Length: 287
Ligand code: ADP
Image 1 (cartoon, protein in one colour):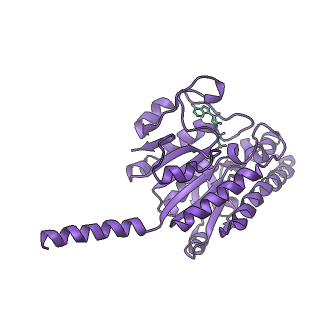
Image 2 (cartoon, rainbow, N blue to C red):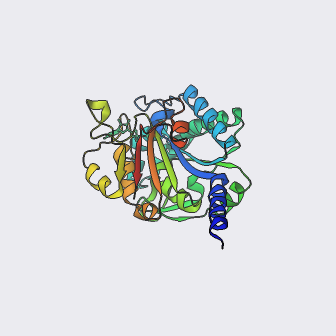
Image 3 (cartoon, rainbow, N blue to C red):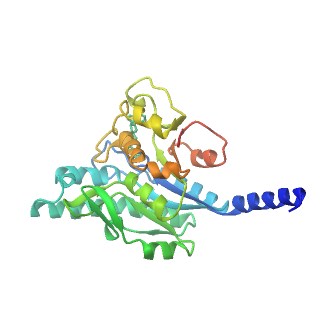
C-alpha cells in the first residue's frame, strides 16, 4: 500500500475505534446510594436521579453501560444480623434472607425508577438467579439470556446479592466481585467504581489527613492494600480494601489492558469529566 494511503487507512481504523460504543462497567457504591451508617434503608434519591441523568447524557454520546450498584445497609444489616455472611446453617436464617432481599429490592427499584425517569432502558438482572459461587467466589454464570437481551440496547442493572454457594449453601456476592466477571462477559476494558471519596488514599480519608493516589499499577496495589481500610458504617463486603483485593484477584483483566478507575460519584459530573479526560482527580489502576 502507498505510504499516504496507509496513513489514511490507519486513521480510518482509528476513527472507527472512536465511534464504536465504549462499554463501561459502572458500579455505583452503596456509600453513594445510601447512608451506610444508618441501619434503616436510607436511599439518597437525589443522588440516584443525578447519576441517572449523567448516564443518560453519556449514552447519548455513545457510551454503553453495564450498571452495578452496592446495597449499603439495606443488605448488610440483615446479612449481619442473621449471620448470612457465614453461609447457610440454620432454617432460622431463611426469613433473614427474605428480609435482606426485600430491603435491597427497595434500593434496586429506586435505581430502576431513576433510570426510567431519565429515559434509560435499565432492566434488572438478579445475580442470585444466574450466578453460582463456591466459598464466596463466582465459579459459574448462566449469562446467555442476559447477553442476548443486552444486545438489543437494554442497559443491564445488577447489584450485590446473596447467591447459591456449593460449599456454604449461600454466600455474599459483592458488586465489586461481579464487576470483574461482567467485564469478562461483556468484553469491557473499563471498570469504574463510584464511591463517596475521591479514590484510593494512603490511609482512610474519613479518619484524618490522607493523600489521594492518582495512579497505581497492579503491582503497586499489592503494597497499598495493607494500608487501606474497610467501609464506614455497616459493611460485610470489605470497603475500599475489598475493591483492591478484588482487583488483585483479577490479574488477567489488567494483563489484557483492562483499567479500574475509582472516583467520587457523589460529586456532580465526576463520571463524565473522567470519561472526557477533563479531570485526573481520581485513582486509575492499570497493568
Ligand atoms: P461502596 O459501598 O460505595 O462500594 P465502600 O464503602 O465499600 O464503598 O468503600 C469506600 C470507603 O472506603 C470510603 O467511604 C472510605 O471511608 C473507606 N476507606 C478506607 N480506607 C480507605 C483508603 N485508604 N482510601 C479510600 N477509602 C478508604
